[in-house]
Image 1: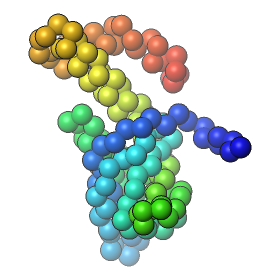
Image 2: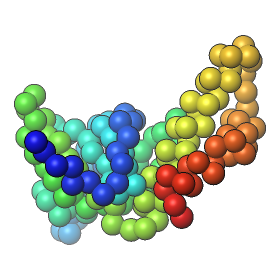
Image 3: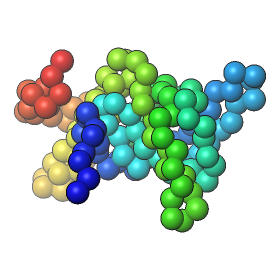
Image 4: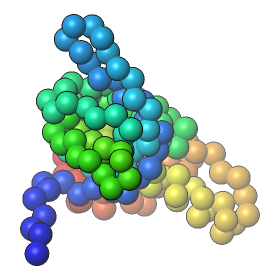
Length: 147
């Protein structure tokens, strides 16, 4: 039986991802893909190209119409059965982990907005829904992730 070694919970969120692999010699590579999962400590995505371990990357991730910029380090690059590569990125700064938490909150708020709109058959303003979600659920989110 495999023992889970992860320190952070991963969420299966698939969003458009543009990854710039930083080359010390200035030959940066751009990889377009979708995220497979995201957590406070990093993210996983599939790529048609291998990315060397310890490569620095800058990512632009579009989540529910909002773009987040993240920096990290490639910590795993494994062949997949379909010929692609599973690339694991570790966020290398505390600020990146905070951005990951914010991305998750945006997803939670969008899901809450969808539920409200379906339940009451209305269109809701995201800003109003965000305030309502924070009022109702933020304390639970804080318990899960701390400060």
